[in-house]
Length: 396
Figure 1 (spheres, rainbow, N blue to C red):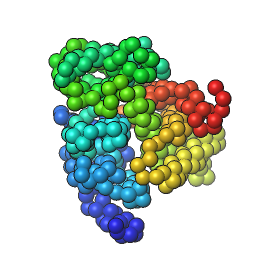
Figure 2 (figure 1 turned 180 degrees about the horizontal axis):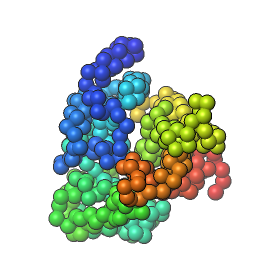
Figure 3 (figure 1 turned 90 degrees about the horizontal axis):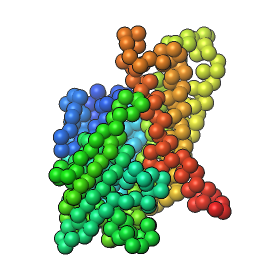
Figure 4 (figure 1 turned 90 degrees about the vertical axis):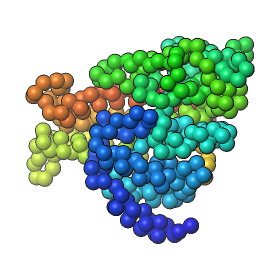
C-alpha cells in the first residue's frame, strides 16, 4: 500500500484533473445525482463525474474491488474525503443503495446477490428505495402487516408502504414483509428485494408542506418475487432491518456535516446582504453570535464524526453511535435553515412572486423540508431512547 503522503498526492492530482469545475460548486437539492435506469441530468458533467468516480470504485471507496468498490483502507478513504472537501467537490452519486442497502448486502448477502447488486449500485445503474414504514407501523416498525407467502420458487407479496422516499423514481425497493404471522412480531419478518418495474407495483407521490413530493405511498399487489431475492434467512429479516437502520441513521446524521466548513456560508452572505456590515462585521449582533455559534458547533460535529471514523475497526457496523449522529446531525441541520431564514429577514417569508429571487424561494422550501429531519429514519424520541439504553446504560 502506498504511504499516506503518496496516496494523498496521487488522489489530489487525479481529482484536479478529473473533477469538472461545475461539480465543485454548491449543489442545489434538485441537482443531486441519483443514477438509475432512467437518470436525468441537468448538465453532462454530472454523468461524467459519476462515471469517473465509479470507474475507480470511489462511489463506495472502502468496498472490495471484487464488487466494483475502491478497496481503500479507512485511512485512505478519509484522505479521499478530505481532498474532495478541499476542492468543494459535489458527491458523485447518492442514494439509499450506497448508504443503506450496500452495507447490509456485503454483510448478509449471498455471493450471487453481491455480484448481482453491488456493482450496479457502485456504478449508479440502479436506484433503490426503502419499503419499511406502513400506515399502521411507523416507530413501531415491527408491527408491519405487509405479507409475503412462500409458494415454491417465489413469494407472493402484498404490501402497503408509506413515506417511501423517491419511490416514483426508484428502480428497485428493499422491503420488510411478514412471512410468519403466527410467531412474535419481531420473529416473522423477512427482507426482500423487489423490482419496481413489475406489474402490481405502483408508487403514488405525497405532496408535502414544502410543495415537493419526495415521499410516496407504495403498493405491492399480488407480485411474485423470486425466492433468491430473499436477503438473509427466512423470518430473520428483523436482524437485517436493525442493521440497515444503523447505516441509515449514520447517513442521515451526515447532513449536519454536508458542506464541512462551508456549511454556514449562505447564512454569512445573506446576513451581510440583509442585515448590513459595520466595522467589517455583521451589523446585527444577535445574528452574528448565532451564526458564529453554529459554525463552532458544526466544526466540532465534523471533528467528532472524523474521530469516530478513526476509531472504528475495519468492517465494524455503526452500532448505537449512529443514533447519536442522527440526533445531533439533524438538529444541527434544522438550526442551519432557521439561521438562513433569520439572515434573510423578510425575504425569507416568500413563497412565490417576482419580489423574491429563486434562491430565496428555494431556501424557504428547504427550511420547510428540514422539519422532517427529526422524523425520518427514526424519530428524535426513538434516537434518545437508544442513546439512553444502549450508550448510557440507563434503566428502562
